[in-house]
Length: 68
Image (cartoon, rainbow, N blue to C red; front, side, top):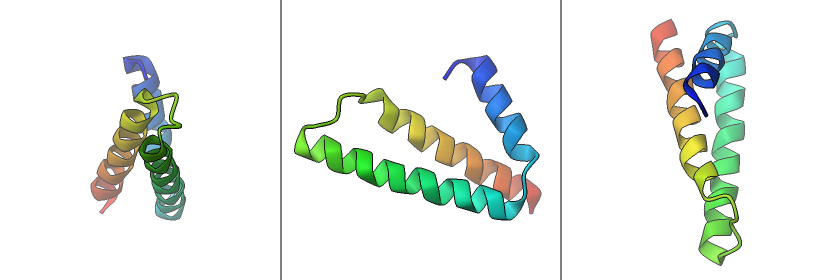
């Protein structure tokens, strides 16, 4: 993700509810699990997606902690 995309993503996250953030976090964690599984089997083609998903999860957790 480029800087502008990241800023837009975080801006969007700040506009949603805690429940929606938790839902998105669950979805990303499932995707991360699937990506790790593919990587372990040697079937992962987009290796950069692993890092991107981890960062998105961290951004969601940061926004959640800001809301508390």
